Image (cartoon, rainbow over all chains, first blue to last red; front, side, top):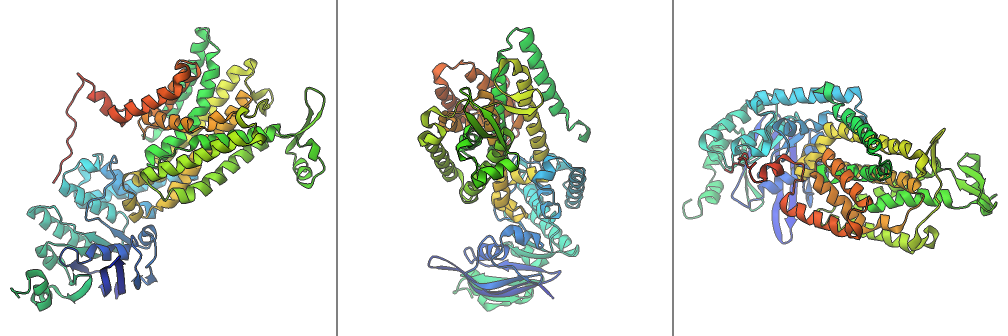
Amino acid sequence: MSLLEVKDLGKRFGGLRAVANVSFTVAAGSIKALIGPNGAGKTTLFNLIFGALTPDSGQVWFDGEQTDGWKPHQVAAAGMARTFQHIRLFPKMSVLENIAVGRHVHSRAGFLSSMFGLPWTRREQRAVREKALEIMRFLGVEGLAEVEATSLAYGQQRIVELGRALACEPKLLLLDEPAAGLNMRETSEMAKLIARIRDTGVTVLLVEHDMTLVMNISDEVLVLSYGEKIADDKPLAIQKHPEVIKVYLGEDDA
Amino acid sequence: MGRWRHLPIVALALAVIAVHLLTTVAGKPQYLTQLTMAGYYSLVIVGLTLLMGYTGQISLGHAGFFAIGGYTSGLLTTYNLYPRNGQLLVSLLQACGLLLAGKDMYGADLLLVRPWAACGVALLVTIGIAYLVGKPVLKLRGHYLAMATLGFGTIVYKVVLGSSLVGAADGISDIPAFPLFAGLAVTGKSALRTQNYYVAWGLVLGAMALLTNLIRSRVGRALRAIHGAEDAANAMGVDTGRYKLQMFVLSAALAALGGVFLTHYNGGIGPSEASVMKSVRYVAIVAVGGMANLWGALVMGVLLNFLCLRGSFGSYDDAVFGLILLAIMLFAPDGLLRAEFVRRLPGLRRRLPQRRVP
């Protein structure tokens, strides 16, 4: 049963075909990796799926609903969460507050009820705090609750951003280069963490350049080149795929 | 922590009483007049602090909202409907009890809108205009938003300056008192000076209580997230467009509330209240207070407005506020009351936690 289905998705930027008729599915409970050389259209594809960009053609089906053309906050409310290639934590906010923003779709206090500090909004606030702390314990960063998030070391910022996405309790988690900028030890920890997240029942779609991470944890790998899908298969098959080898190593070496 | 939630509000209430006692002891009760006016300006400032400092959306048009509130209420409570008596709309208003019949000093018949009704209309009109302006304009960012709101402020200024209906360059005068309840009215009469001081600061206290609740809430967190990284906030499910618009309308309504009350307190309003320099002044005060610092903006707002209204800056007050804005941006972009600025002062220099880069 596929949780996400992308059908003939296309996007142009002026004369550039960033994404061209890409179709694929992500099975519920699996990890799917999206790889390809720089400029292959991976992040564009992410942005199309998440609603940050509107596709020129094609459809996105998520959890039984057609979500292309939706705004990111609507997609988030439907059960999708994401991280960013360039970390986008909220500055001047603590780690706890950053993760608490991820609870937005699961809480409902508005302007008036908040201004009057109605008792239920305070109960809701406590519940948000508890859930955020629970996520921090899951990630092993509970000691950083009151630290300003953007003052952390890079690797820790990646974890906090992941925590913020997990706070949405998503059905589908989109990770845009989760290991970018991490050292080898941090990368292997990130791989374990992503596998653990999948084991809690979250489906994962990730863009990544670190092939060890991709091949170790992915159930399926989708390869993009110049906006087109050139392969979509199990990791072992991808490693032997002639087209993929050509794209990654160049024509002469193939 | 929850138990001490109300502590700052209680402290502010005590400070308001202490200032009153101080002026009495010092034998300067006339200071209460400027403190009352400063209180009404504070309503604009605290609303703008939430919009600018917390949500990160600049407005160079808030004097416009202040003026729309003040002018609407001023016009409705001075415009004589008696000659139109019998017309459908006038009869309807009268039937609803919204009109007040009386005689002017020459004995001519007057038929005016009651102040509370005028106040309600002024707030609704401002909210409507803020919604219509904010909806398209808040899609813009940074300089573009600043320029668009500046354009709005300029329009309001030029309209009130050019309309004979609202007295053109003279503005509206002889605006009646705003009776709140028996024996208490918003008016500049010195007999009611102390009472009016408490009316103004009661409103400020109310606004501060609501706004401090707001910034601690789910909405406040979402607003700060919008300031920090709008796309990420949107990806976390925050309807960023709607939140920015709601905050814009709320701050405009607070500005209009200040405008209505100050207009009735002064008994008049002129086009200078709508001028762009007034908007710049509000922005400067929010910046001096520390942008995302509600209490800092309140304190600096009262202090600067009080000095300005006492005439401490002579006729150079616009220049002073321009200078303040320039100096703050250069030397203390986080405001004067921020720990970072104090630490940067010579002798107090301490190592700040360095931001680590990969």
